[in-house]
Amino acid sequence: MSSCGNPATESDALMPRRPKFDKGKNCVKCKDAPGNIVIRHAVYCKACFFPLVAFKFRRALEPFVNPKPDGPRRTALKPAGNLLLGFSGGVGSTVLLDLVNRSYIVNQKAELRRDGGKDHPRHDKVWKRVIVCYVELGDALPRRKDKTAEIAEVVSHYEDVEFVPLRVQDAFDPSWWRRIYGDQALPQLRVSLENEELAAVLTNPPSTEPLGSLRSYLSSLPTPTAVASALQSLIRVLLLHTAVETKSSHLLLGTSLTSLAISLISGIGQGAGFNIEQEIQEEWVPDIQPASDSNGSEWLGGYQKGVRIIRPLRDVGLKECAFWAWWEKLQVVGEDRAGWPESRQDIGGLTKDFIMRLEKDYPSTVSTIVRTCAKLSPRGDVSGKCVLCERPAQEGVQEWKARISVRTTAQATDAVVLSSSSTPRTDDAAAAQLAPHLCYACHTTLTSRNARPPPPLFPSVSKESSVTLPAWVGPRMRRKVGEGEMKAAIQEFLLEE
Amino acid sequence: MSTITLSVQFSGGLETLFGNRTAHTVALPARVPVDAAHWAASPAQPGSEQAGTEAETKPVDMAYLLHHLRARALTARPELFLEHGTVRPGILVLLNDADWELEGEGAALLHDKDEVVFISTLHGG
Image (tube, rainbow over all chains, first blue to last red; front, side, top):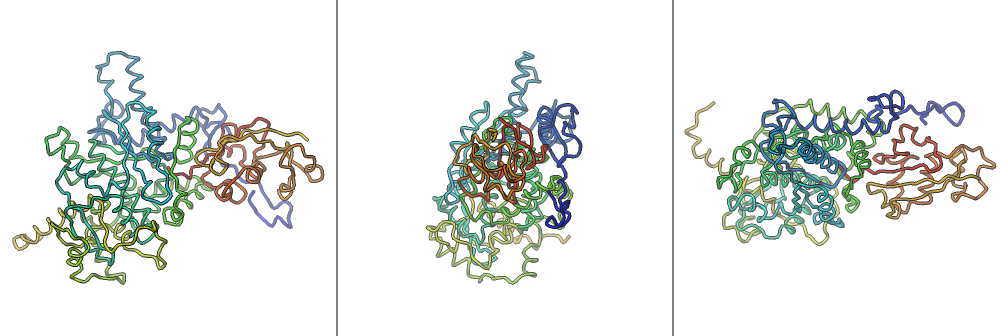
């Protein structure tokens, strides 16, 4: 009941709450059957609900399957590579896997049986391989259960789907990096988090303790928001490089409309407004050539086009996903956030609480958030990719930050001290500053401190003055610094624009 | 006094708040006091002949079921299940396989052998 007066003194002060659907209780599509679900004020029966969600899924995915998105649809889906699906075990990715299975695996087999003629081009699979990748966070956060076995069990129910389990510490594992990119570009980077310039040094040989490096990295981050954001970024880049490894041209994520609204608002709150377009859809091109391609692989063309990151459930709310999973009896393993008490106090957790409340009372507003964000385009030029999150970085971020804030700057000798004391074996050391190569959001993640420091993530892991960065940062820094040095050498011969 | 029996299921991680049991059978009185302030004194176990005799009564509804589950079945952290007298945002409810919003949420009337499902979407997506 909602109040329109003082119920203590007026007996008629309470009026009935307005129903959450616009017309009758019958389905708005078939007009006949009694409704089973209310989706943003519209009632649908169970029979009309499934085609509706499947249609929204295909509408968001299929126009982007072909390398040139404007070709004819459905009958001529010819992706440049395989399909990688990022699977978290949550409701969204569970429904996404089910929809991919129905639309592109089981469906194809059914057609084959019905028509015969197994060599007919109509029966060619859209995706030669469908790979599901799960990134386990069990070791990254305290008191968190390892769910790899449960996830593997869920994925094993689907035929013709490959399973690639990863652990988030693989991001710090030289052997994982070597598997994809070979021995080229192996040096890792250590960075000092003591000041905002982030003095860095390339180290060779790299660290051989990925879990220790991960925990040290997370423990050195200044806020719970930074920890959550860093983990999200690690998972995303791990998936991108796995897409390269599996020769996938498309990476699908199970981000629902609700989750997308949460990540957009939360991203803006953390300074990632410049990447709002990438949060909705992204085309990522690796700038390091995989080892298999350098050996003359046939997939060179696909590699050059990069990986298209698509969220096919971006028009499907979390409620629809949950109803789909329940009615289809899908097993949702879920993510256990309860094991990390700080997680609800970060910007992402607070945004999630806010959006969930908003969606309950005003269901259409969440869709409005996403549609409004899709119309935004950031100002300013791009100055290459951020070496940490591999998304476009805005030009002039450090100059702007220097103008508007009081900062702790590094002494000129910091990098030299770092290379001689913190890392005893720096055979191939090249000191540099990391800050100019980061986007605003990543720089903020590493440096923005609270007045009150957060409780330690792992009591046994002490905060270090310098930490190892993920495996992809060193090689990309070396390329960038190398390019800078080359440019400096020929500077006097360059023509002015 | 007549009673009704309901089948209640929890999914999406909510079962952890209810003794890790996904399926419950719940018996409720067919009529309950209109004023929620009397619910605490009303019989949680059917068969007792106290409530409904003095106070004005109404057919049992979802709001009473939520109160009953909180008082009798919940084993941990009630704030993760209920908020402001209804389920927390992010928890979906199905009554006989249909969205409870179609039946008026807390005001939806319950009948014998009804099936109620609570699904949490708070475990990521």
